[in-house]
Image (cartoon, rainbow, N blue to C red; front, side):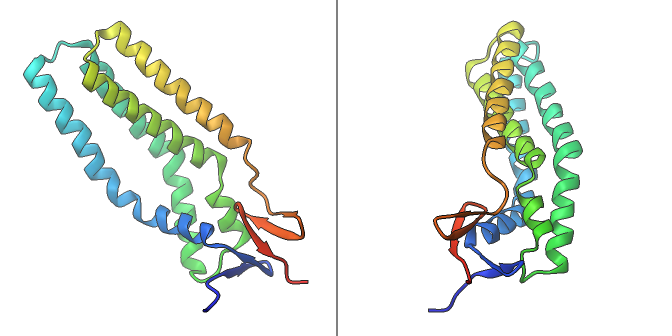
Length: 175
């Protein structure tokens, strides 16, 4: 059996880093179709029920907020990760590891997922403006709670029980 680990600064890195790199490479291909499904299903529901419903306005504004969050916080960081990964495709550098565990990128993703879940809830419940805003405030709160809990996770390599832990994957140290 071959060892599928690559090295970073003389230490072996587990498959978690490579999985994160792979996910960051393929996830953008799903943004367009996912946005289309949410947009067209929302338009269909709004045309059947009426465009003057509160949840319709709040949902479309929330979609714009999701796009702004992605453009401002995610796109520059993902572009930097792509650039670093192209420079050394078979090696995970410290810069790449830092980019993969960037707290702002993780916060952006978690907040956007929470907002999407809030939009789906609005599409199902069809609330008025006030309760739609309360629902989206709850979704933002959920996203922020997930973000803060993510900041508490360790992001730097460290030693635990004689093993080096990088990105949550313990590996045997080469001593």
